[in-house]
Length: 93
Image (tube, rainbow, N blue to C red):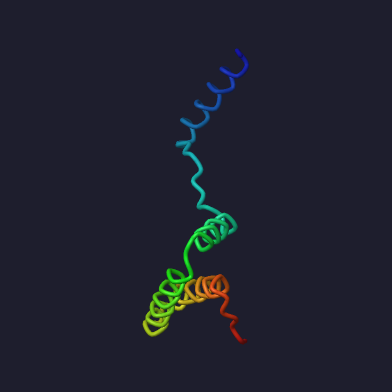
């Protein structure tokens, strides 16, 4: 226990000497976790709700594309594919 306290004191002195302010790490939720959450959300919706969501998502995707917001449009395109898969719509590529 004494060793830990000594180590903490050394770290605090070092931080003060070098003007270091320790902060907590903040990381966004990983894409895998987001995908899992989104998948569960889609599974819990009715086909009617999913069709409405599909129409709204496609309209918003087209709006972003017209406004040259391609990154947002791509995200919505990917989301739209997942929604349509859940509904049972097969997209031809």
